[in-house]
Image (cartoon, rainbow, N blue to C red):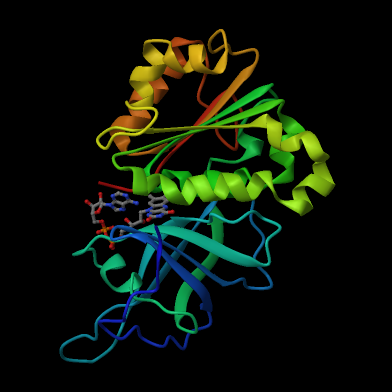
Amino acid sequence: MTEQTAVTEQPVSKVILPDAQTVTSVKHWNDRLFSFRVTRPASLRFRSGEFVMIGLLGDPHPETGKQKPLLRAYSIASPAWDEELEFYSIKVQDGPLTSKLQHIQPGDQIILRPKPVGTLVHDALLPGKRLWLFATGTGIAPFASLIREPQTYEDYDQIILTHTTREVSELQYGKELVESVRTDELLSELMGEGFADKLVYYPTTTREESPKMGRITDLLKDGTVFKDLGIEGLSPETDRGMVCGSLPFNKDIMEILEGAGLREGANSEPAEFVVEKAFVG
Ligand SMILES: Cc1cc2nc3c(=O)[nH]c(=O)nc-3n(C[C@H](O)[C@H](O)[C@H](O)COP(=O)(O)OP(=O)(O)OC[C@H]3O[C@@H](n4cnc5c(N)ncnc54)[C@H](O)[C@@H]3O)c2cc1C
């Protein structure tokens, strides 16, 4: 199903900068998605769910030959306790950064600005019983961090990760991630053996056939999700939400959550749900 690092078609610059980190592994999930791990700066502290700016040196200036850093926002997909950093990335064929980044190999360097920020963090939510993580596409990245974070299981009785993609192969990263969490010895030691029962995974596809078809927004609106999971519905007393997808997706989910009486929170003012864009566009 997965193919290992593809042949490098263009050289990835060796970055000699204070913010350089070394790539330790790369995995290609299909021709549009890959994940990779890099060394973690000793001084980098972050909260699971946050994002940083990462990148490579851009093309040399035609006259001066100077190369400027080409940086983009990326959610850290690994949890705060991990000694390395993981990222899950799109490959945009004509994208300034990812047209190059998709060719990185172990041993290459990337630039990582160690200034984590973001709203998909536990601090931005008021205490609740059930945490919904709504993702489309690469929007699963911050949740890959949060479902490996012990606090998530300490704070909630149930965590429901919904992931919607067009095709089945786009679900593979999340599927393997959930399996790895369920069998994680460290988490099980910390949280007790039954911790994995708290995590519910609800993947759906919109184009290619899979066991559960449809947009999560439609499946929430027509009650399918609640019926499937044996849940009455959303309530501001018990339910908390984190949303990460395209702009229209975020808007649709927000409407559903607000319709159920949940309010949007922020680091400075925690409430019942938080939202972040998975990309700008
Ligand atoms: C807060 C935040 C967190 C982000 N986290 C991630 C992440 O964890 N993983 C990741 O791959 N990207 C993430 N992005 C998007 C990322 O910043 C870049 O846009 C992406 O790496 C493509 O860069 P590029 O220079 O190749 O193309 P860009 O010029 O940035 O984008 C080219 C086109 O591709 C579309 N696009 C960009 N990113 C995506 C995406 N992830 N999924 C679908 N379409 C996309 C854009 O809408 C645009 O039309 C995040 C963006 C934000 C704002």
